[in-house]
Length: 360
Image 1 (spheres, rainbow, N blue to C red):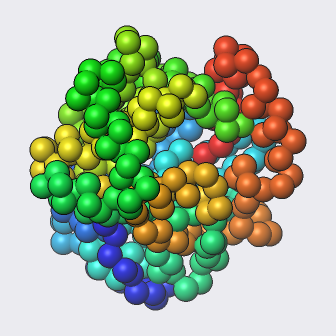
Image 2: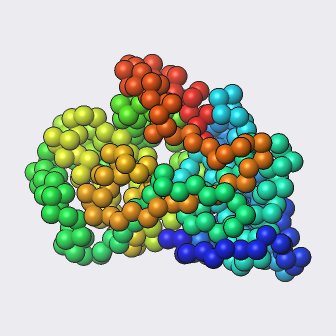
Image 3: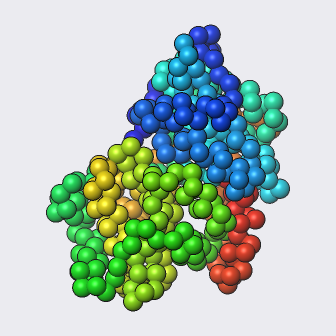
């Protein structure tokens, strides 16, 4: 979705002013986000309240204006944790954010103010989760994450042809099972059902789960632009998914499944049925989201035929000496990941939210 960005100067244009946004700016902020090709679902104003109410971290959203019009936004969140210190991240606890601007002067002004804010707060670093590096004086981290996107044809047969042969066979089995009533897709599932499927799934991967409150806050903040879906067999939910809709894009975001989902092809049908629902509501792009390079999730998305686009996050270092490397692929967390996988789901679900608050 994001257009390629050119590098920008670090001197701000005096015609552009930048300040911290307030609740009174919400409508104008979101109007800009919905009109901007650079902005994503994770730039929406509602994320500030969702994160603050769920985790207690304070949003420090920056809004750029020129001649009374909004010309850029930076949805920064000040994350302070016992384990990983203090950081200013746009947008924390999501895979996107960063700077979205209508002009180079607006982008430069936002970058300068973001760095100044990080300096004044005494954080370790300021992190911009943008797709493309555009700030020449900021540090860049690449080679860790990639995003996967592709079209959603309106025609079902054309959509199926885009799926590589081997994965297409799995999808057909899911479609057949659904046609026979063996599995059922539900687009208006309960938040709790989806959460518990997700919680068990991430526990199996060795990752702490966030509190269920997060999904309830997301549902309240984004209403018709978020969907909770499940695929069940004989009344037993096997796979669940939280999907965001932004402009013409469908973004399946939190997905989880029980081990039994594989044999039933529930996971395959979960994504396929979403594609068809998304097309019916006017979506033309499927954003399969971010995955760490070299992981099973990365390979799974490639099996669906989606091409990977590497992401380039940028950093202004304040107290930190190097860009952070807080992710499960870091070898120093291997022992923790291995131990976490062995916890009972009831225990991991109870402990996970405390740790998840640290993992922005």
